[in-house]
Length: 109
Image (tube, rainbow, N blue to C red; front, side, top):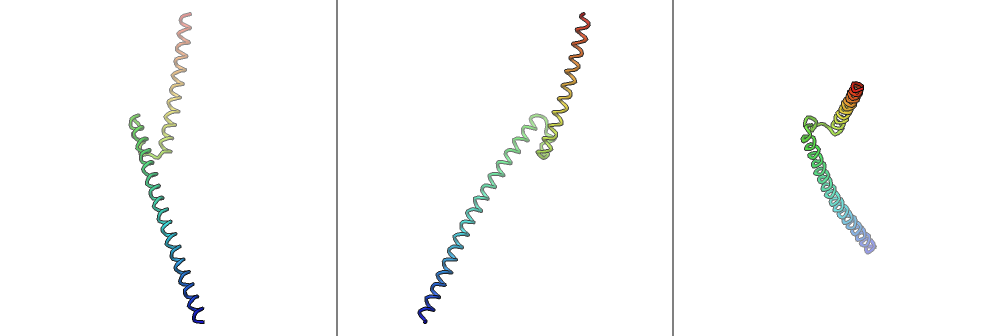
């Protein structure tokens, strides 16, 4: 009977040892994954900062420094409004030229 109890205790100790080893293995794996995720996140931040800097430089070069610190959606909205305004001005100028060329043609007749 004592032999059977000793075997049960040894089996239990082995089981606990195996569980501890599994836990250590999982912990090490999670630590590696966390470190990789930290590195990935750092790379994403660096990439995002480079993109923001590039956009800021382009806006500065084009005289649009006042919107460099706005959100991307605000920047796009501003540029769309500017585009619409310029298109309207262009159409008005084209109409004016057409009118001038028409009245000039009539004068020649």
